[in-house]
Amino acid sequence: MGFMMRKFDMYAQTTTHSVCTLGKSQGYYMNKFVNRTTSLVSAMLLILMTVFALQAQAAEKAKPKPLTAEEELKVLVKKFSKPKYSKKGADSCLKCHDQESDLDATGIFANRHGAIGDPEGPMGQLQCESCHGPLGRHDKRPRKGKVREPMIKFGENSLLPAAEQNSVCLGCHQDDHTRMGWMGSEHDANDVACVDCHKLHVEHDPIMTAETQNQQCTSCHVKQKIDMHKRSAHPLKDNRQVCTDCHNPHDSSNDASLIAVTLNDSCLGCHSEKRGPNLWEHEPVAEDCSNCHTPHGANNAMLLKRRSPQLCQECHSSVGHTSAAYVEALGNKVQGKSCLNCHNKIHGSNHPDGQLFTK
Ligand code: HEC
Ligand code: HEC
Ligand code: HEC
Ligand code: HEC
Ligand code: HEC
Ligand code: HEC
Ligand code: HEC
Ligand code: HEC
Ligand code: HEC
Ligand code: HEC
Image (cartoon, rainbow, N blue to C red):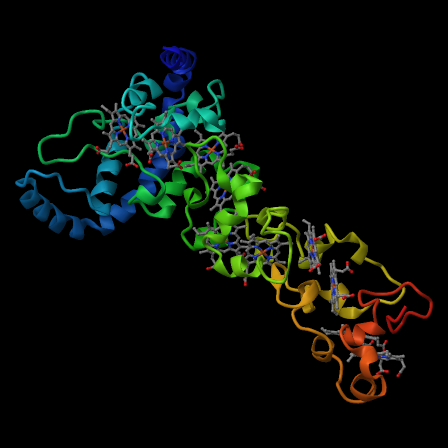
């Protein structure tokens, strides 16, 4: 009973919003959805005609055949052309999608999208239909041999391309300053959907939760998953650090979608003692930390790309002082840390005699 009460209260509070913002919402993003999809649809007209012929045959059989991607898109576009929204908002959906249902939708009320009074949020607008589109005939018992009229689906179950799914989200999140960089970002360009990362019917979205984010990101980014378990690594595997400490998953205006403008700014945000200025600078340090380090993990100590002396000898000649000193004259004195036994202020020195980074 408590839950029924809450449902009722919720609708009573928001019913005015959902009615008066109906037109606005349609113009704002539902039309965008339609525009983007109509071109796709016309391109698929030929395919569809064949599909219809096949469907007519299938209709004779008793078991309803699931819609193809093209058919589903067509139905959805048609639904949006004369949208029939439900009169009771979320309450009409929860009749069938409550906690007893296999398709329980009540989790949405545990997060920001379920906030009842928020005029910017779905519950202050068309409620469930802000995301899933107009109810139309979805609540009607399907005719024999037909499937239930579909709603917009997201994620794994969806037949819609990422761009179409994302257009629903971007209807509210496009102009939001935090989302400015999405269009054309690496994730956008590679058809990653918002819901490949975000879960919306849960209290805590795993991608936005520190304990689970790294796992979520590395479900696609396997190389980084391997790296973070290497001998030397940023503390990602125990979630003391997360991918979004350095990366912005929505925006690729900086190299590698880093939050900071340059790679060095990114490192120096936490390792500020390496910033300098030093009396004696080591040129490659000021230039780019990744001359020597790799960001996620390495088999060498200290996230180094190579071990010394090879690391140093990528740039410094191995003949003359360096190789002679290393191999013969100094013997075991230079084992282990190699060149760093003597040149240990490798990031630069402030000692008056530190030009060779030995002090
Ligand atoms: C009369 C019962 C009923 C009502 C009312 C109803 N649904 Fe459904 N809905 C279902 C059933 C049953 C399914 C399972 C799919 C099927 O049978 O075709 C479903 C499937 C869905 C799906 C797809 C889930 C998936 O991933 O497969 C979404 C999304 C959905 N409904 C949203 C809504 C929304 C939003 C509303 C309200 C505007 C609503 N439904 C109202 C019965 C209903
Ligand atoms: C802000 C957008 C948004 C709103 C509002 C929203 N949904 Fe969803 N819904 C989604 C997304 C995205 C998914 C895919 C699964 C996920 O992300 O958790 C989904 C999944 C579903 C499913 C499939 C569930 C399953 O178990 O696979 C149903 C049914 C559903 N929603 C119904 C509803 C109903 C009913 C409401 C209103 C009470 C609602 N949704 C409100 C975005 C939304
Ligand atoms: C009707 C407008 C609307 C739609 C549609 C919508 N959102 Fe939101 N969303 C909001 C508002 C309002 C907030 C809360 C303020 C904010 O963080 O911007 C929010 C918050 C969020 C948050 C942050 C949640 C948190 O806990 O801080 C995420 C992530 C998000 N939305 C993703 C999505 C995705 C993905 C979709 C599409 C499936 C979507 N939204 C569709 C309005 C909307
Ligand atoms: C590659 C994974 C990924 C994709 C794809 C993605 N997001 Fe996010 N999103 C995140 C992460 C991670 C956060 C948390 C950011 C943080 O904590 O710094 C976030 C945060 C948000 C927030 C909360 C506000 C903020 O910036 O902190 C909103 C709203 C949001 N995303 C909406 C979207 C929308 C809309 C899309 C699709 C157009 C989308 N996201 C695509 C991973 C993703
Ligand atoms: C659904 C799979 C998927 C998930 C989940 C995912 N990514 Fe990606 N990501 C991609 C794809 C695809 C690319 C394109 C380049 C490639 O193939 O690596 C990409 C590219 C990137 C890049 C390179 C961007 C550039 O500008 O060069 C970064 C950084 C990145 N992702 C970070 C993240 C972070 C952080 C998360 C978690 C918040 C995440 N990704 C989650 C699929 C995913
Ligand atoms: C300490 C900062 C930091 C953290 C934490 C971090 N990254 Fe990175 N990431 C970087 C830097 C810096 C680069 C650019 C490397 C380069 O250009 O040499 C990068 C590059 C990438 C790339 C592009 C790789 C390529 O070869 O183009 C992907 C994908 C990526 N990171 C994913 C992730 C994921 C997933 C996580 C979380 C598990 C993560 N990163 C955590 C700093 C970080
Ligand atoms: C968000 C903060 C943060 C950023 C950004 C960051 N680091 Fe770190 N770094 C850490 C932490 C925390 C540790 C681990 C310290 C510990 O384990 O006690 C660490 C450790 C290291 C180590 C020592 C690794 C080892 O095996 O002991 C190196 C080298 C390093 N970082 C280099 C970099 C470089 C290069 C960048 C830029 C690509 C960078 N860091 C960016 C926080 C950061
Ligand atoms: C010329 C190669 C080189 C460059 C470039 C370089 N480092 Fe290092 N870094 C090293 C070496 C070698 C070590 C290991 C020192 C040791 O074992 O005593 C190290 C160790 C570290 C450590 C862990 C030990 C400590 O001193 O705290 C951090 C953090 C670090 N570097 C950060 C950075 C940052 C940030 C940058 C860019 C501003 C950078 N490094 C650029 C060679 C380099
Ligand atoms: C990416 C290239 C690069 C790497 C790797 C590198 N260095 Fe350098 N190093 C330079 C450059 C460039 C200079 C400046 C040369 C100059 O002024 O003649 C320099 C200067 C020096 C100097 C001062 C030389 C002088 O005459 O003033 C020493 C000592 C030195 N490096 C040691 C090392 C050691 C030890 C390593 C390995 C841990 C190392 N370097 C790795 C590029 C590099
Ligand atoms: C036992 C200490 C020691 C070790 C180990 C050592 N150096 Fe030196 N290095 C010196 C001293 C002392 C000088 C200055 C005297 C000189 O000019 O020979 C020097 C000078 C240099 C210079 C300045 C230019 C030059 O050749 O005079 C560079 C570059 C350099 N070392 C790089 C390296 C590299 C790379 C390694 C590792 C392969 C290395 N050093 C190992 C002590 C050492």
